[in-house]
Image 1 (tube, helix red, strand yellow):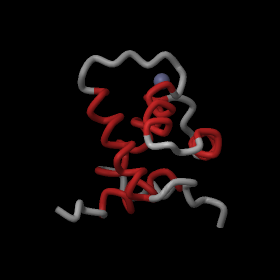
Image 2 (cartoon, protein in one colour):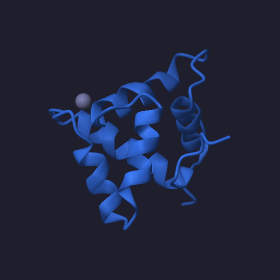
Image 3 (cartoon, helix red, strand yellow):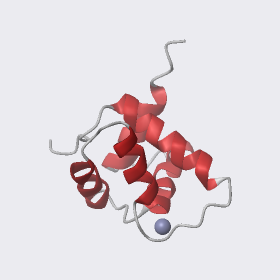
Image 4 (cartoon, helix red, strand yellow):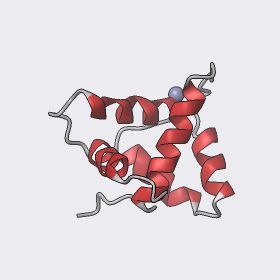
Length: 96
Ligand SMILES: [Zn+2]
């Protein structure tokens, strides 16, 4: 399967949390991956494969990443790769 995200689920969960937190602070999406890119850059990760992966999974900008991942709480029928990744990521609890 080529559906696996190019970053670890651990980092993926952190990214989702970052986007989620930012979305509650009045963040206005400018139809780009500005937040996602900044997050990846801060961690020294390659941006391009992740953006491609998100695009392939129905997210065209930061807020669409949040919209797609927000579905994991209620829609058990949602089985897209992004939702699956979110479910996996949310299952990883911090070690401390
Ligand atoms: Zn957006």
